[in-house]
Length: 192
Ligand SMILES: [Zn+2]
Image (cartoon, rainbow, N blue to C red; front, side, top):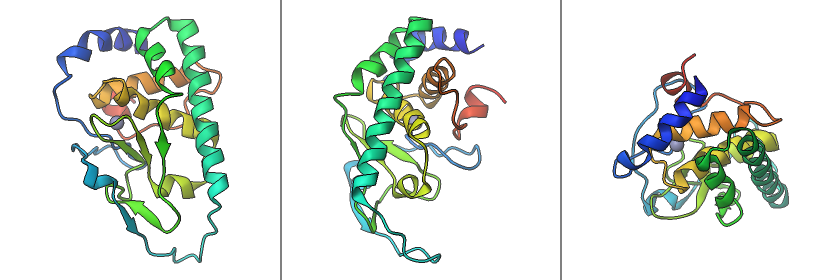
């Protein structure tokens, strides 16, 4: 089923190029919100300290996690491309090194980051914004890699959430990492 979906994506890619899209990946629930992000969404706003006590955020650890996530994304898409020979997976692989992945400084979050938003990109801006919540979750590099692959699919022009989700899921499933989590679009786009 996934392979027929991925063949379908290549066909849909251009047809959907002008539609608005959402870059939200939800942790909970399947009620994905659709919206277009603007540069204002990337403004930093202060966040209240956690009620569970002050969390010590070490900037070096954050940059290490993002670098490890980018590396996992690179490895996963390389392995998936070897098996599938899909051009969109190859495009994601090729986009990873040159696409900056940024995150908010300690005590701040991007305006667009709600409790369900993990990351977003702004159309026309080749940059991935990771929300504060993800940096504080303590995720693995493979988990971060999967998130980066999804956002990277938007960067290469897959604006439809289902198209981005299929690339994300296929890349992980055909890699040695396996699927790390089901995003908020999973059941609608892939099935249960
Ligand atoms: Zn998305």
